[in-house]
Length: 296
Image 1 (tube, rainbow, N blue to C red):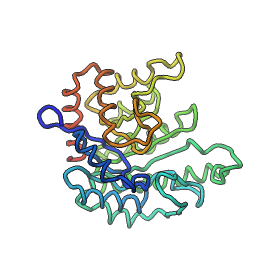
Image 2: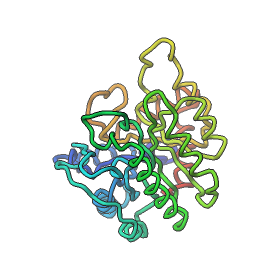
Image 3: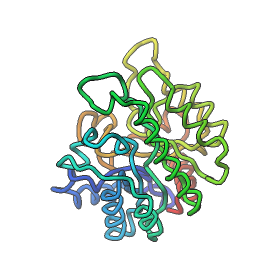
């Protein structure tokens, strides 16, 4: 815990995934000891149900969001993330079931949901990639239903957006799809990985950003040195929140390990350094933003 009883908030993690089955309680305990509260993000119906279960089991430390990750809105049999599910299990999008979950008292947002074009390239190894146009249409249809749910329930929309390699295509599609959705008060870009040009466009139309372990990574090429830092400096501090996306993208000095919410402390430290803001002041600002948006 930090100054004035403030906590750091990991606004996006996946503690319900089976990769934590053997030590989930210990992971949550370490977060508690580090002064970290958590929002566990659903990625389909089953993981959304599990996120809600954790929020009820740990009411002081955890809240949930319910979502349908764009990688699930694909041709059956393509997507399998070993961290998310031990066996390949298709789960069809069912907006009615998600609506039923969304009204739970521990649900503070809708998502993650959105667009993911990263693997939609011509490939004979991935069947869905041979139908990229159809998959994009399916992702857009699911996303707009989720956006509508966020609007109906007056809850923030947590967005996963990943463009094709060396492209801004998914971000540009996202901007076009949401340009007339003033009925969604809070639109949040989870794990933002776009460039400065896209960041400026997103800031201009009111998006918020959750930043994670990427902020701690050194740039791989000298020509890009400081590029992500420049994006972080550009985004107003009032639009920034922190996340881990656990179990993915562990920050330095834990890079390469399974991520966990207690590691978000490293993200906040790096953000304070880049923004040149005292650590306690940054935590206070981010906590205020989280409370405004997620009521947590």
